[in-house]
Length: 196
Image (cartoon, rainbow, N blue to C red; front, side, top):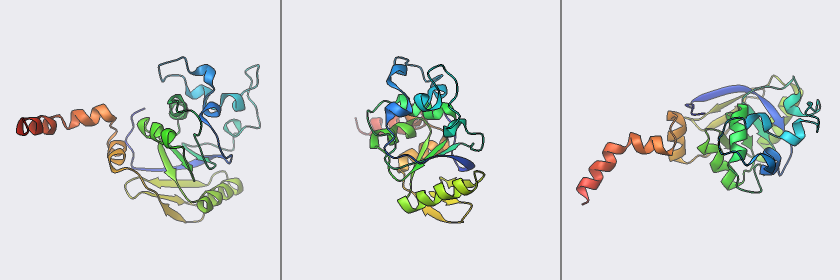
């Protein structure tokens, strides 16, 4: 799942629902696993599949009109319990970016730790994105991590988004926390020598 970020341009999958919690993202019955593999197939499991395992044709992930590596979600995405498995499922499905007007803090950090970029936009910009995607499912969005901008290619409108400088560095270089420490091992050892 470690992938370097730069500029991502993609069509989007819209999920205009507010207060989507981590149990809806990945139901609790799937939390026994400790390996990240296979979680993507159970993303939004109870919304995507009928009890017999067949696809619910009216759910957006099953709608052939929509595709892409960007999920556009309603306000307060990732609320509820702090399970990292929710971020595993989002990354495992193939999403690189989630755009919303508000994320639960722990879920937002879990996404960052799993190489999924959570982009916070204003409610007005979010609603414009939903409208553009509904009008044309082929609408593309550009997420520029170096410049920290998100652009609706249908309207040309952009917004700036915030990201922690450390996490930005890690995403742009494909580093997790351990990789970052190893990358700076010489500096750490030099500091230890100077501060004995």
